[in-house]
Length: 279
Image (cartoon, rainbow, N blue to C red; front, side):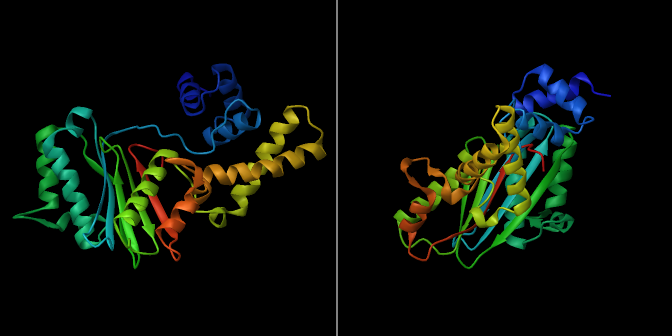
């Protein structure tokens, strides 16, 4: 049964009209992901990435060691923004990031990490007792590299990024470029480093969506095929980090900025946490 809440959720994710959302859910037997793809094919929605919609309050934090060789990225959740902004919860979230960074642990063993004369688990219990809210750590990641890691924490700690480059910054200018790239990831939410990371399955799905869109516009099948192939390049430019236009200078791509860091510089990988996003 398709409920009004399902229709509302789909509308929030896609921006499509209520009637279109209801029809999409009817056609896909209530499958949310298939309904999103249905709307895209019909041209009623234009999303290629999961929507940044927060279901929980809390903080996301990225940290690295001073030499930039190890890093941590965590999401700590609570029920209200009031608690998320409380200095004790902020300290708790930072303690989690510090423990992951120092121990490399990303499972329940991290609660045994010592924080002064307490464990991280003791600190969690104190937070739970004080605020009477559900407190949880939704995800934790540890990074280690032979190159360099650059963290970016957006104001308010609802969004954080960890960027791994193949080389260390040779000077302040190179370090600035790395920070710019991490900010690019935060702002533009790429899905892949470059087109080599795009699976054939994902590419085929996009081509089929573009083809269906062209057919719905009245194009002949052979024309629709050519249009679909032509739109693939735009898909790469939107979803692949190094092919995106550089946000600080639209005359450059991110790949151009990477070259300015050094001849051997490459983006190895990145991670982007947005508070409450679907995972």
